[in-house]
Length: 458
Image: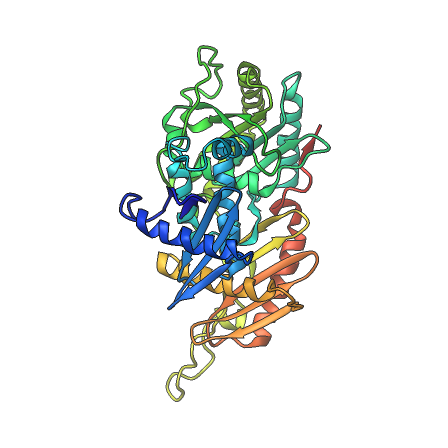
């Protein structure tokens, strides 16, 4: 929930604000009591539920969870919600509202963006590897194809007042071009992905959208302008549409996030979009022309069909990355007439691999082992526990091996990468370690396909 320092309700994911207004007043009183004693309240536990509090200027943000996340992880989630609010208002506007009137009701300025806050909160509840790792997932693509796409982008830029250019497909980043001195922060990219893949409103507005937004990690003082073109919604991808005009759109609907735990297969995740970000609010038509030039060249080089095919293919299965040993896949080696069959071998079932230098991650398909939402949430809870143990304050762990009744897991953190993997309860430490080494070697071998290294620079 989010409330003002005066106790005014601003947002709550669950419950009607009118009905829980008194509860928010109690929360505000408790927080204010500790602030007045110059000992700010960081959090408390009630039964199996953890309350974590974050103060951001005139706003109090409160996370209430019984899913077992650490305080650090819950604060990261609250910070993401705060960034979502800033992306709508900017910091100077937010400050000005409360300086002039501390008891202001922020619900009206935020009206129409509640679905963005809700979709972000829901992604945390369902389990988001992107949010946990603070990294983005890229579409696995050949280095030559990605290089060709970057060159098309750079060639089409011309005199357009462009700050960033991106192509996304299947909920994953395909290509990015940027100024030499500016990188696009992962938290800003996550806000863009949340807006695109969690919102039915942007797509419902048609194939093109012109959206003012603040990217807080880049500059929380003002707005940038984002041109979004959904290629799957254009009646003819090869034709220019010079009759269209800029129209601001807000996000109203909800859908499964491409950057979450969902796999390829839903229509929204298979769409491809071109995103062009400019500091100039009058640059709509310049960016529209740039979009047309990009699409024409991508079609000519057959790169759009390549992107679409790869996006529809989805993530590789775990056994494509870590093959089952021949002795296991070939079947049992016992005499069925005289022997009892051995228990089925427990192999690695899933992993998360983060490239720390590139702030990007990769993972295999969740199917078939984690097709059920409950199984996915249990998997993410295990990842949260591993991540919390490795990144706890004063922790100097580099490798962690955990044995549980339902699963065996391994965390491996180096200055270059982070690896978290999960296997069945009967998996030996030697087998899990061998699988972790194979994943690391695979990621190193496929690095330039799995991750965007540098991107296009101008």
